[in-house]
Length: 132
Length: 94
Image (cartoon, rainbow over all chains, first blue to last red; front, side, top):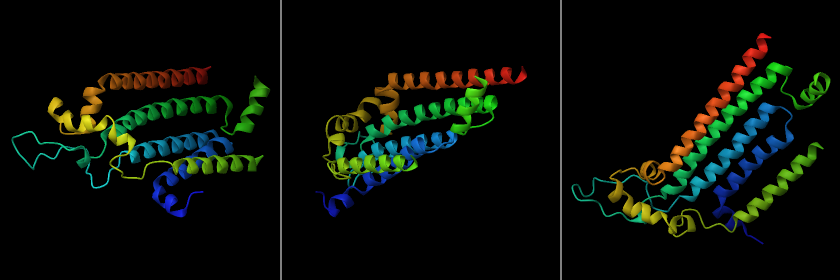
């Protein structure tokens, strides 16, 4: 069984799991569709934060080439000097896709509200059964 | 029924935390995500593209087709929003 020291070493991952479970609970347990959407966004951001935290390196700086050290010649770059840029790039794509998903979902919610006058799941099911 | 969600959420969370104990330590320079292909980008990318910002050159140079696909996603999303909202307007006029 894992000790407390292991848990402290993984404090960022534990934080993201807690965030993710908040989002998961909102998606499954809440009745309001807007709250479900907010839960989905929290879930998504927990994953994005998790992957960005994978790029961290001890004693490394942001992934922008430091040119001031040796002007003129191309600087010799060491991988340990800079944070890993690939997770950040991939999560940039994920953020863009997430914004598109949120926009489409909000438009659908607007449409549902205009037609049925509610965003509560139980009332919505009732009205769909009544009006067809 | 209300507590079922809480139980499922807690169980999944504990499972994920147990799984995260096997992860490499935070900030480890030799962790798998930082040791296979990313040193190649960091060491050679500036020479090959002359862009100082590494995120920019990976996004817009090495992965530019990926970024093109991203633009397609945004375009499709914008079209979907436009069509859905236009339908809502014509429905309200009826």
